[in-house]
Length: 415
Ligand SMILES: *Cc1c(COP(=O)(O)O)cnc(C)c1O
Image 1 (cartoon, rainbow, N blue to C red):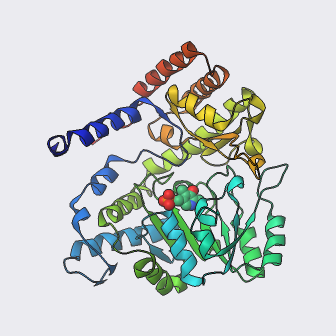
Image 2 (cartoon, rainbow, N blue to C red; image 1 turned 60 degrees about the vertical axis):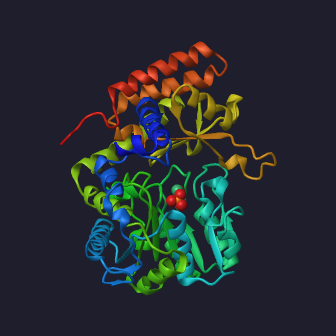
Image 3 (cartoon, rainbow, N blue to C red; image 1 turned 180 degrees about the vertical axis):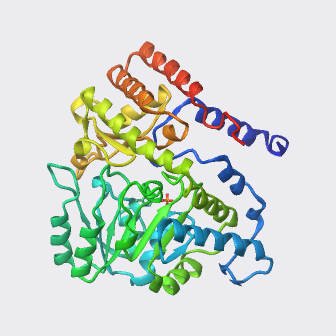
C-alpha cells in the first residue's frame, strides 16, 4: 500500500483500527460494517471530481461520469423508497436536516420535535446545536409510563404552539413511529412534516418496518447506520419541493458534494434491493429482539420493555452503575456501545446519563445470529456485574475474541 510509504504513522493507525474492528463486538446502534464494494467506491478516483450544481447543470467541465453516477444514485433511491424526489448531495444527516428546514422555513419559524432525553437528535433543535439558533423549537416527550410517543401530547403541543414544521424521528427510540397519526396532526395545524429516519433507513429500505415516505413532505436520513452504505446524508421529498430543496443544499448550505460518496450511495441503493441486504435487515430485527429478551431475563429494565427496531435501550439506574462507567467497563472487555440519556434523565441537574444503547446492526452484518445474541447478553451481564473484577473482565475479553474469530468482518473474499 502506498500509504505505508507516504505516511507509516497513519498507515499504522489504519491497521490498528482494522484489528480493533475485527476483534471487538460493535454494538453501537449508529454504526454498521459496510460491504467492501462501498469502501471501493469511497476510495475511488471520483474523489477527484469537483461538482457544483446538479447533473446536466454543473459549474465545471468534465462531469460526464459524475452526472451519470449521481443520476444512478437518484433513480435507485427514488425506486427503493418509492419517493418523488431525492437529493444525494447532503454531507451528513445534519446538513440534510438544515437544508430541509431552510427550504420552506424562515429563521425564527417554529418547529416541534422530540426532545433529546426522549430520543430526539441534536439537529432537531437541541440548545447546543446551531439549529436552535435558527429556529424556534418546542419539544415533545414520551409517555411517562409506557415511554412511548404520546400522540395526544404531540397534538396538544401542535395546537398550542402552531409550529410550521413537525419532526418525526429519533436517534434513541426502540419502537416504531405512527407516521400516519403525526401526519394527521400536521395537516390539522397546517405544518410541514419531516421524518428523520437516519437510524432506521436500512430497515425501511428492506420494507420490514413502516416507511414514512407516503406520509411526509420531507424525509432525511444518513447512509452509515442500518443502511450500511458509507457516510453522508440523503433527502427524499414530494416533487413539489424539488426547486427549493435543490437550492437549499447547493448553494444554500453546501458547496461541492463528494462524488465518491455519491457513488457509494448509488451502490448501496442497488444492493438494498437484493436478497442479501434484505436478509441482513431481517436478522437485525430478530437479533435485537433476542438481545432484548436475553438482557431483560438477566434482570435489567429496558426502556419500553423491548424493541421493534435495531436498538435496545437499557436503564441502569436500578443497578447502581451509571452509563459512563458501564460504557468504559464494557469497552475494556471488547464490547463497544454507547452510554445514552434515557427519559428519566430529563431535567437532571448533574447531566446524569443512566442508560446504555445497544444496537444489533454491526454484529448481524458480520453474520451473528440468535445463539450469539444470547452469548453477548451473558457477556454484557458478566461485565456489569463484575465492574471491579479484573479476572472476570479478562475472561470476557477472551470470549469476545473467540466470538469475533468465528465471525470475521472482512475475513472472507466472497467474489
Ligand atoms: C445520526 C443522526 C443524524 C445525524 O447524522 P450526521 O450524519 O451525524 O449529521 C440525524 N438525525 C438522526 C435522527 C440521527 O440519528
